[in-house]
Length: 178
Image (cartoon, rainbow, N blue to C red; front, side):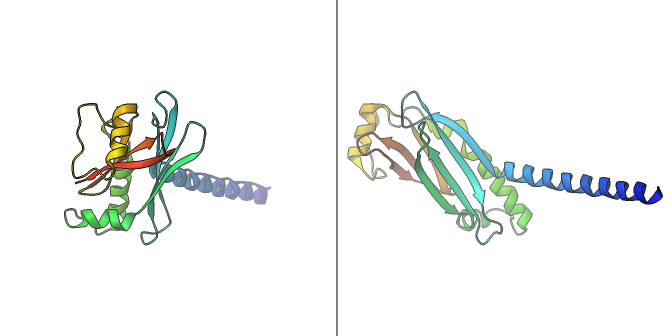
């Protein structure tokens, strides 16, 4: 009888340990991924924006940004090495420990979908293209169709503005700057 009680107690302890460990992993993964919806490739229907940190160690870790259309088709994919993101901030911040780097990346994930990044519309009728507009025809297309845009940063001083091109049926950069 004693052996049965001891065996059940050990099984219970092991089960409790395993469940708390798996919950911890789930929480960490949740913090390294963020999702939002926004009318992007259509004026009304919502597309799904996802940003996540993928990779197991700091050498191969990447920030993966994708957009899936309201139809479920991936229309945009951008992979950014986290080492590049970190390099832009290491000079201005104390990030020598791996835990500091993870904390920074979690903040980036959270910041990615703040409201000011969702631009309604991408380009207003009175805006004029400048030297940071790579494709003036696309810029003018956006002025006419009124589709929304989105901006994100590749580093401390690099912002990319994207929108859906109805003519080319793909996501394109319409503005790139500091």
